Image (cartoon, rainbow, N blue to C red; front, side):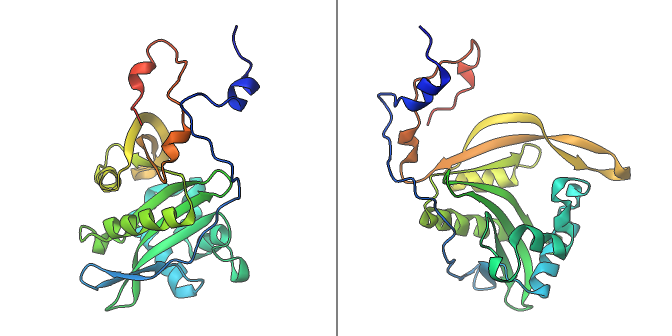
Length: 234
């Protein structure tokens, strides 16, 4: 006899190790760190005009394909204030930004935008982007390594990213951190190209568990015919 959905969710399969503390997690203070021969400082973004303007500039010159989408507010400094808060609310919500500051110029040249589901204890890497004049020196990888240890300190149990299938850089970075590709999903995002035309991207869903959280996910699945072959074991 088939189980009702509520019964399926409320019953712990025999291979699951459940947990009992449901306290929401939150962002912890991030410890600044020097990287890449001490040429760059990794830190949290600040609620200053210079930081917000430089972050928006990075998006405009290196990630302008987000125009006319929900994320196009990040092409302007005000957009970062809208998603990160202002004053006492700055970085107190579910969004967080790490930046890379060039020591010599004191300029923000790279950023990483994260979203934290505090009750679900999940973290999404929304974007890793480096200013076009500073790419291929390792800034993105340095930000990713810092994020990896940081979110574990925050209590994250599972992190994920949608990485562009047509651009393997993010896939490679996340793989070095232990993220596993679980699926390739066509048409996930809409992006703008030349002449104001747009198209849809193909994205790779990559995932990592922290603190043995994978033991809370059962392997006892009831899949449609043909779907089983798509499963990547955890």
